[in-house]
Amino acid sequence: MNRYLWCLAFVCHAATGWGQSLPDEKIVADAAEQLRYLVKYTEQSVQDSTRVSPRTLESGELVLVRRSDWTSGFYPGILWEMFELTKDEQWKDWAQVATARIAGEKSNGRTHDMGFKVYNSFGKGYQLTNDAHYRDVIVHAAKTLSSRFNPAVGCLRSWDHNTDKWQFPVIIDNMLNLELLFAATKLTGDSTYYRMAVSHADKTLENHFREDGGSYHVINYDPQTGEVKHRHTHQGHAHESTWARGQAWAIYGFTMCYRETGEERFLKKALALFSWLSERLPEDGVAYWDFDAPTIPNEPRDASAAAVMTSALYELDDLVPHKPALRELADRIMTSLTEDYRNKKGTNRGFLLAHSTGSKPHDSEVDVPLIYADYYYLEALLRKNGKL
Ligand code: GLY
Image (cartoon, rainbow, N blue to C red; front, side):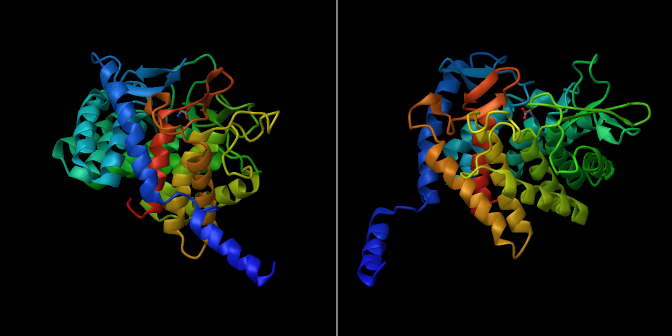
């Protein structure tokens, strides 16, 4: 290109913003406008205490879930994130109301999802307000979660269902619940929670990965001996395939464990997962629902997995100096999500992102908005801007 054309290209580029990602202030302003719809529709629909948080859309209508659903903490979490991003007290008021609705989960010992529910709501609220009641709920919830730890296995049990298939199932998603245990040790000085979290992460490191670096979804342990009995999937394409959100939970979980412990083995795993993703993600960085889905590129994407990965990558970039490829990949996914996966303002009941996949094998929540995609997208934005 001659000098004249270079100058022309530069002037056009500067004038139109072509090729540049949207400024983060604009993303926040857009999110605020869109999420006000989500609040409006949610608050219209929450009529009693049984259905409290939005999860997705079904035939265009908002699906609200009970507080016991694993996703119930994301709506309050989003409201806290918006408070953090905007400093507008209105978001804090909404967040406090939505958080209070799920407080009873602190005593629900029938699930491993305590971190998803309580840490992403009460945990975020505590970081922003120092409210002693939030602190008490976090500690109580961690105590309840710790009742699912089996010393012979060295892990927290994930599910109580399908006992014909699994005796002691541990799913890769469970890595995320460890953050609640780390928080409880910091708040109480009782190292029991910390030791359980490290044990669980170590067992996951040992048993949840194939030689090629892909993760298994479900490991079934013998609850008496701690031996691995089966390596299965539940939401992935096949037992030996790599479910996209599972891989996202893995990189997020090991990054968080490195942040909390400083242990090099967790960092090594997080970086290995980063290399794996760098090689396996499609051009726009937004994963198909399973990396081994049979008819890629004619398979649904999973924007939720992409959002989780982005948040993890920004955090990893923060923890690891001199590795610009981490932030480059995070920026690439973030730009794709922002440019090509956001719902138009005023549509889809106020959810931010489209094109997530809950569970393709169960034909459930395929190519829809999912509340946790929005939560991790906003978390990624916070991390990108050093606000977390
Ligand atoms: N933790 C449940 C899921 O990722 O679908």
